[in-house]
Length: 582
Image (cartoon, rainbow, N blue to C red; front, side, top):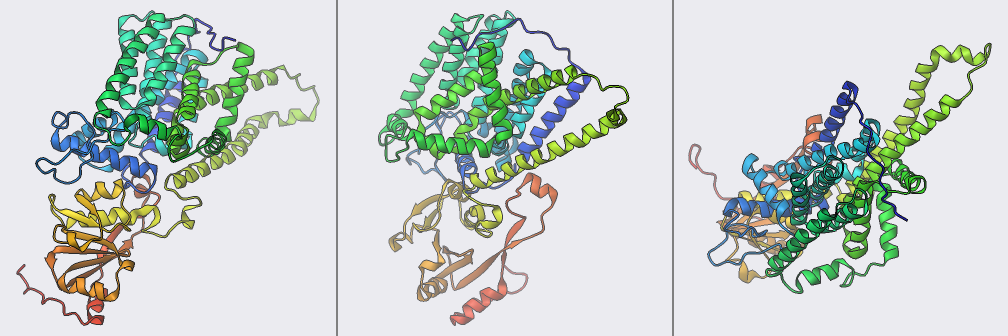
């Protein structure tokens, strides 16, 4: 059975003002959904982990330059001392980190700058998807496919994440667009170069790019009009890039290298994942990150297209089977990382949008075949009300669907933060989403210098997010022998008894905040400050651009509590300097 049989040439659909208005509205809707939380701190979960790691590597590109780093993704924190070893993130190719570095160069280092490349490329993906669907099915199906793409909770949550998926999706769609030019518009050398270059960019972003390249090459050779030269060139150049990346990054790897990492992601290491467990979790994620409103029409359209037309849409074919192969090959990684499923977003959006449009055309055709209302029938009295009644009926259908889809967005966001219930049932602020870790790191950064060492107790919460915001060399230890080397010691307050806390306060500056003590070895005591976490009323701009997860906040010095702490322990505070003198 040849499931990729193609019909062509395609009919030409005139571009109307209404389509332009709806298209611009769709683009603005997607932009609005992607900039929600664009300034949000890198918190706990996939968003925070990936954003902090990409930003750390991008910061090193900005600080040391592409040539000094050898274009390698470096994870060093603080000031790199002469002769200090580079810490290479050898797990993945470096292109997304370079994009974030360019964004930092242009707009300064910030969470928004880190997310900007993914936001731009997600919007570019929408444009490409719209063009690919419009060619085959018309503007109505393209608008619905774009709407499904825009409103999928997976896209809303991970379309702006500083990670590999948004760039690879954009490059793969660009390659399919160039392949269409080769097939149907007599595109020649320029389109062939664009096709191969787009897939090389996808491969230089991350390994799934090579899987997508394989299926795009397969589509080029089995779907008429066939393009065997494209198949050969895609295979040769992507294979050369794959071998080059493998040897380049593997030369800097540790332990079992990329082969060991691949075995681990495949479930052949310490994590054992059965295909049944992966299938069950994937189905659960499809319900959460897409919803039945997208999944069911997509499934029905694919089945209808296979049975009736004996074919499968090229975009659906490439992204669906690439995701399936990716999940089967690396089932442990797919089981852990929900955002791996983002590649399926394109296939589901196209299939659902076209399916909904075809279903609407079918129902409209049935309605036109209905017999006219007989003269004298009471139904004729309702004829003047048909438009208001239609509006009411559509409202009653659309509002529950919108509410259902929005509920999925909230649930998906909570899951990405590692929360299994509603936000209100999670840990209280500032521990919710581990905002406390971000604030601790920023406080430490404010009281230390670039070249100083921060000592972190092993039972403190440490993560790429913490290391990014502290931006200092860190040492995880509780050994007092390292106190002389460290500038600051971060330790959970519950791990120290009263006598030990008093000892630290008498000899050093100590900051107490959010259940932790920051012991500043560079500032002699007795000195004690308590910082309280204080929130303020949020505004709609804060909710849109910063976070719906936490309100505006600050760490505020509590002078009264600080003084009472010293008095209870009979520790005399240092005298205040005379007014007007430092």
